[in-house]
Image (cartoon, rainbow, N blue to C red; front, side):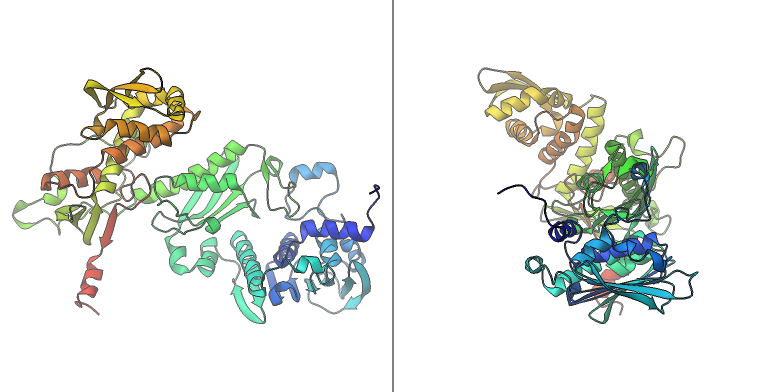
Length: 565
C-alpha cells in the first residue's frame, strides 16, 4: 500500500484511543480538570457503567464563555505555554487532549460559569463537531455530560466489560482521588444510587474508613519521612493486616495516582520477613518532590511517571514504611507491674534465667534514648501441645507459640548480627564431607562462596562438580550439612551483591537449624526460647513472614466459656 496521510477523522480517533480507554478514563480526565480548577466539591454520576452517561460537576474556577470552543481544540490548554514548562508541571492535566479526545468518541455538553460572571454558557459537540452553543443559567463551576461513549466506535465497545465491572472501575478511581485529596468533597452516583461520598475537609484516615472500613482505618500506621528533597506520607497496614493481592497498594506522586512497579516493590520490601508468602500490605503512600525531579509526560494516560533519581525515590519509600513498621513493633504493651507477681515472691514472669546475647545497637533508637518497649509481653510458659506449640500465659490471656517459627526468628536475628561482625559460631567436621554439585550450583558457589564463608562455611573444590565441606555454622549441628549447602546454592541468585545475600542465607540457615514440629522441648528450653523471642526486633513473625504467636485474650476466653455476655 502506498504511504498516505490519514484523514483528520481517523487520526483524531486514534489519538482519542490513547487517552480514552474506557469510562473510568473519561472520569479520570474530568476529575483532574476539576481539581486543577481548584474545586472543593466534585460530583460524579455514571449510568450503564459510564457507557450511557457520565456527568462530572464541580465548584471550581469555571471557563469563560469566549474560551469554551478553545477547550475542545486539540492541544489547547491553560496549564503550560512553553516547552520549558514541561520541566516543572504542577497540575494534573497539561496536554489539552482530554476534552477533544472525549468529544471525538461521544456526545459532550459542557456548561460553565466563572464566579465573576453573571451568566453561564454551554457548548455541545458530537463526534468532535460543535452542534450547539450559547448562554445558560448555572451555578459557579463546570459540569461536563458525556453520552453514548464509543457509540461511533463500535469496535471499542466490544472490549468493554459488563456495566457493573466498568462502574466498579469508576468507583475505584473516585476513591483513589478522594484518598489523595481528603480536603475535597467527592460524591459518586451509580445508576441513580449513591455509591460513595466524602465530606471534604477531612483526613486521609477518615477517607480510608469510607473506602476500606473503619476497623482497617484505625489499624493503619502513619508512614512519614524526608530524604533528599523527597517527602513521604501516608498510611500502611501492620503485618497483622494483609490482603491476597497487590491491588490494595496505592501510590501517589505529588498527589497524582500512578502505577509504579518500582515503588510497589519498595513498599513490599519494607515488609520483607513480616508477611506470609502470597500476602500483601494495604498502603496509601504519597511522594512529594520537586516537579523538576519527576517526568509525568511518559504515558498517554499519565498513569506512569519517571524519576530523575530513582534510587532516592525507592529508598525514601522503603525507609518511611520500614520505620513505621519498626516503631509499631516496638510500641507493644508495657509489661505488667505488681498484679501478675505471684504471692510468696515467685517472679517467674521476669525471666530470671541465664543471660542471652544483648540486642544489637543497630536495632535500638538513638544512643541515650529510652529503651523501646517490647513487642511481646513477658510470657510464662505453661507447657507444650502436640510437640509443636508452646502454651504460655501473658498479662491478657493465653498465647500459642509455633516453636519452629519462633526459633527461626531467634536464629535469624542472631545469625545476621554475628555475620555482620564476622563472628558466626563454627562447627568443624572431623571428616570432610564430599558434596556433588550441579553445573548451576557449581557456578553459584564460585560467585557466592565468599558470602557463604562469612557464615562459617569452609568449602573447597574437589574435582569435577564436587566440593569438600570442612566446617559449617554451628547452628547446623545435628542437621544434614550437605542438604543445607545444596539448599543454599539452589536458592541464591548468581551475581547478587554479597551484602544482599546476607538475609537469604540467614533465613535458610535459621530454617534448617531451628527446632521442628514434633521435637519435644524441656520446660527450661521453652522458657529460654520465649525469653530470646521477646528480645528480637520482630517477634510476631518468622523470617518467612509466618506468624509465630496466636493470642487468645482473657475477654475472649470468658466469652467462649459463657462467663460474660
